[in-house]
Image 1 (cartoon, rainbow, N blue to C red):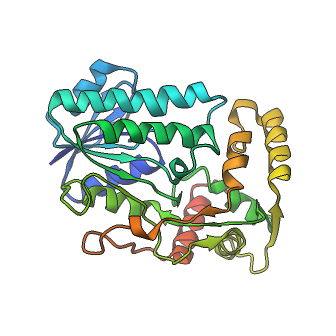
Image 2: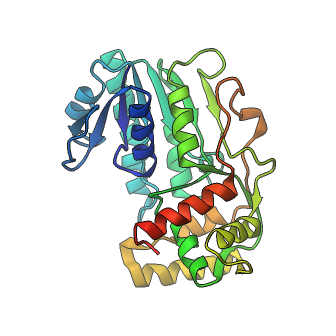
Length: 303
């Protein structure tokens, strides 16, 4: 099977391609910059604005996995251009090429679109996919962690010094990137259990993790048996976001948009929107996954 992948050079996309190749699949992947040749992968130069590149990407593919998305941006317009218009362009290209199976990686943030420009853009993208005649499945991952991740890495780096700042209240689900990659490939065949459904996968932990529990698990993975967990109010997080914007400008990780998003008390997946057990179950226990992730960061010189 040939699958078309967007976001193949990113965190989730790389894990997806690795897994697809290990299963003997052929991959055609979109990339904005030149990539090193890789057996089993055909790189298509272009982005989600390039309709010709998108046609080349999906031509002859049996399925499309849309992973690409902007997670951090200075304004709503940037999210709109990439996450909404880009999804529309890809869906139209897939329809035109007859690649009707379409797996869209959205975000749990789409559940609460009023909280952030990012979540709003993902919610609008979901509407585009649902309104299309494609055979679609929407996947809303919770917080994703694992090797190559640059987002949750900030918590590992803080844990190195024994202090981990997190939202004071709330709970969240998580998933290891390799478990997510397995799920995305398992969904390619479609079927009545998954087609035209929105799925919220996780690590299998009922009711997710409190932010403090997750912070302590990260601390443990970093060799800190008693890390100091700083519970931050939304107001404090917004002040920190402004400071991060001044210090790191467009490279800031904590934006006002994200401060509002992170402060929401419920980012636990909805059990009714889980994955059928016969199709997929998470394999990576989170504490073990955090330890191997920390080890990867060390080996790569990130810590």
